[in-house]
Length: 339
Image (cartoon, rainbow, N blue to C red; front, side):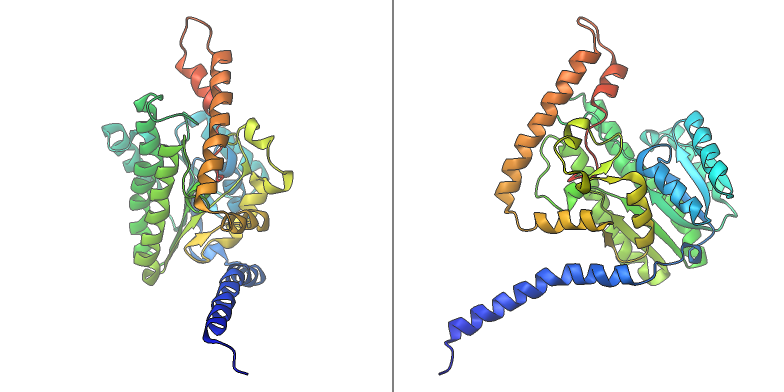
């Protein structure tokens, strides 16, 4: 007896759904089994922004371990010197540093810093740019609660600064017909439909995701690989202790673990979630409906807000105001995660 049409249709839909579920882990497995690209094929120098702490420092160390010379960009000259010395102790590579405050882009001081960057890389075989620098202060707040200048700074660093540094480096890659650009993003842009109370931060990272995908399409035919790398939970100063306490340890990678895997994936497609545990988090979020994500996220981030507001009161004395104390208290909000 022939099966009814409705049964065949449902069976086909179920088969397609199973194939779709299996496609992502199978593609990941195939890439894991494939040898990683030799990063020297892009060039002998790599540029890393925000290299003095967290993922940026670990990525600089990893690239130096792989034998790449480094151009390090950061706003603090002393931190750049300390990081350079730490890398040189471990690895025999050449290092150049450029003091560049990405919050000053589109200003005369920012234009001067970009000019110094172009001068620093003139004549160098720059093959890789890692846009890691980002700002996530003031942390979990309602839009009306924070000083607007903090949001302006965040937008300048996360969005304008990344764009301007990329535009400054791309011409040298184009001239040689090879190169790679890695833009470090956030799990909040791919795993969840909303990221309330971190609205401006996650929105700037959404720009980076679209920016990366468009550049990937624009420049792949010109020999330049552009990739958006998505960290979920990683042990850095941007991940608050309140968030860490609620997570299973195996869900949270160390910065060194993350960057070892991330470096292996450079050049392998437009989007990358490095690490099996982080990839699993991404896959699992796909089974949760949007309304449940929204319900959970607003409650979780309200808890973050309560913690950071309590920390601010502990840091700033009664009757006084210290913008520096405020920054220290709330500057450790989660990043990376769904960030």
